[in-house]
Amino acid sequence: MQVEVGKINELPPGGMKAIEVSGKEIVLCNYEGKIFAIDRRCGHMNAPLDKGTSEGYIVTCPMHNAQFDLTTGEILSDPIPRPRPSDFMHWFGMLMSNIKTHNIKTYPVKIDGETIKIEI
Image 1 (cartoon, helix red, strand yellow):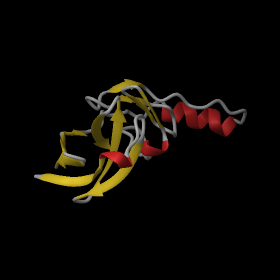
Image 2 (cartoon, helix red, strand yellow; image 1 turned 180 degrees about the vertical axis):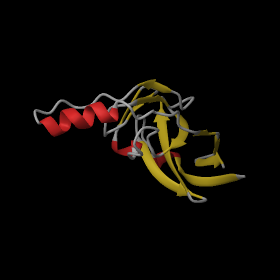
Image 3 (tube, helix red, strand yellow; image 1 turned 30 degrees about the vertical axis):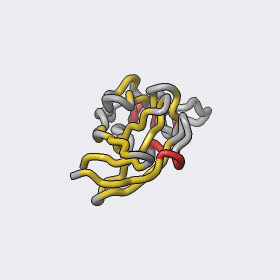
């Protein structure tokens, strides 16, 4: 089922936009003028990927820096805990390293004139 999710002019090059369609949280990404749609939630600890960064075809999670290929949804790098001086954060970082990170889902995108549609 194809669903209209926005207009091209709402998503500048390098931009990301969170949407919800049929109960699914999705992020639209504009990479070099081509629109991609991925799961909004990180495959590691469920952080919202639209709050991270999109550089080239790589989306980086804002929470622990896990990186995903927005063209395939595959994980490119495991989470990297941000260094903090406290013992708790060291313990938490060690615990976090034992949480498996999963690929994220991608959705087929179709551009119809100025309208962005995705396949759900």
